[in-house]
Length: 143
Image (tube, rainbow, N blue to C red; front, side, top):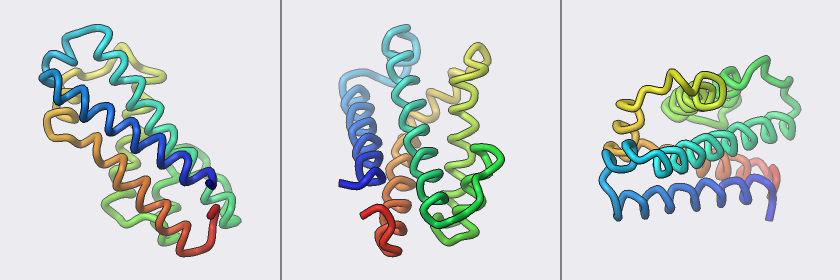
């Protein structure tokens, strides 16, 4: 199994576990409980990091120059035809959330977390991982 497939598997497992958590608890309960909230935030942070790792691996394998920042990677992937515009924008916003979780965690907007849970936006992680994996396979990258 290639690294991209392994990272995609990590994202799939993460999303399954968030789905399971939300089948057992309301979104409000998750956000109000210190341990559930922090477990969720870690899952989101590491899943977004997995997407970043996929992006950087793809760019490297394609011979692209490294992005100057994580936030630049989605734009380059879109330009190279590896992500559609909607998923590139979603990944850019996810990277912003990851930066808040890592560097500005005291500024985290819990209402945003509730929205992510209620609207199942965390499932967008899957769409991005699957698109990157599919486009890589089409180009024979990291089979």
